[in-house]
Structures are given as structure tokens and as C-alpha cells.
Amino acid sequence: MAAPMNKKLNQQLSDSRKQVVALIRAQLIITLILSVLLLAGNRVMFYSALTGGLIACSGDAWFAWKVFGSKRRQPSVTILTTFYVGEIYKFLLTAALFIIAFVLIKPLNIVVLLSVYFLIHITPAVVNTFGRQSENEN
Image (tube, rainbow, N blue to C red; front, top):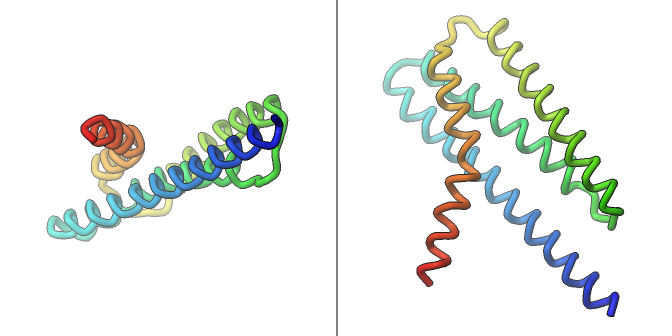
């Protein structure tokens, strides 16, 4: 009975990893598209958008690596702890990247940077919502 359960858990973990990689890839693609579109405005808007998108992607990618990086089976308490610690470090990394951007990048369009950051940050929720709708239609 344990072998089929382990196989099912391993499959779920593998599916979750693939979904996370797809979501981060979508975030990067949308970041590039928005940045290139804003290049028509000016260079400051371009690199401000790129910076905001990469800050969002970096935090999410680090969290995904921390949570899904281990291939071995772990107790549920360890997994939960990994999620909490990963989320705390994701927050700290994001804050550090914003500070670095605000200090080192001059001139910077803060409105564009924050707007793209928030758009990229909600990308997984939007992708999941539309993904579920298309699954329900089939």
C-alpha cells in the first residue's frame, strides 16, 4: 500500500515542479514583453520595467528553488518550515533588490518599476485562473 502512495506523492511533486517552472517562465516572458513595449516610450521606462519584473521573478524563483529543490522525501513539519523560511527569505531578497534598485539605478521611473513588479507578481494567479477556466471548458 505504501508503494502506490509514494508513487502518487512523487508524481504530485513532479507535477508541482513543472507548474512552478512554467509560471516562472511566464513571468520572465511577460517581463520581457512589457519591457520591450515600454522601450517605445524611452530607455528609462524600459529598464525600470525590466528591473521591476526581474525583482518579482527573482523572489519567486528563489522561493521555488528553496521549496522544490530537494528531491528527497521529507516529514510534513520540515516541508512546512521550509515554506515559512522560504517566504521570509523571499521577502528579504525582494526588499534588498528594491533597495539596490532605488540606490543604484538613476534615473528610475518608480511608477513603471512598481507597476510591472505588481503585474508580474500576480501572473501566477492569473495563469492559474485562466488555466482552470480552460480545463473546465474541455
